[in-house]
Image 1 (cartoon, rainbow, N blue to C red):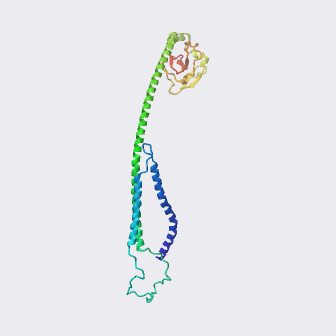
Image 2 (image 1 turned 30 degrees about the horizontal axis):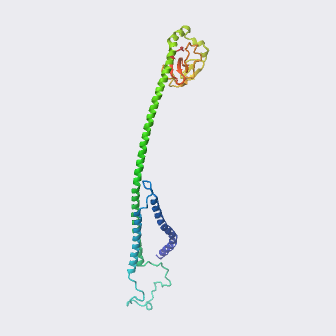
Image 3 (image 1 turned 60 degrees about the vertical axis):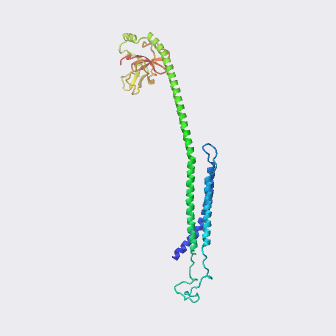
Length: 331
């Protein structure tokens, strides 16, 4: 037991000096932190945009807290002053049954004061009561601090609620403005699209007038009768433009004077008619000598192209098909 007390005393003598500066620093930080919080609350702007004054309720609470602490200290001092003084050895009444120190027999098993090890001073009953009261005061202070912090948070929430409402209203107004602008943009886009369609129809009418003139001076059926009357069915076998032809290949077309070329799968074996748009992969295989085939002179901005054994008259800008000659020759 003595060893335990000695070890505990040694540990306390080492730990208490180490922890004392930390406790003092925490005690100094606490009022600084409260002052910073009050200054931050004072700087917070109102929803109207002006600077809001520091809350007076918080200062009143702090003053009440200081008053309560001062009252507790005064009550503690009063209790200590009201305690009866302990009798001193001089005023202590004599005990008749107790022998005097000089006549007291020696106790062999009891250590003398010279041989007794040092013992830490035991706390007196007054010190214990003071500690209990200090603990109670600290508990009361913590409870009051928690109440104050709770009240501060409530006030902060009350202050933030109008700000959040105002932000929500601003966002709603912004969304409304965005929707109005989007509707205006869509209306303008529809107007532009209508104007573009009208322009396209006007241009198509002009083009169709030119195409009508071409059909008036060139007839497909008349061309076919004259062509078959002048040429045999296998006329192409002796022509130098078909010298590289070696038969039908799946996925490939043969263009005279160009040779074989690969065709996308979705276009192989397909036919297009007048009014359709020919894919751009076939535009490059232009008919070199349209007079040899007896074709009409293409209007400005048009050309004749080979697609397998068919010949198409298309518009050079978008591939619009004006005239078609199917099976110009048979393989």
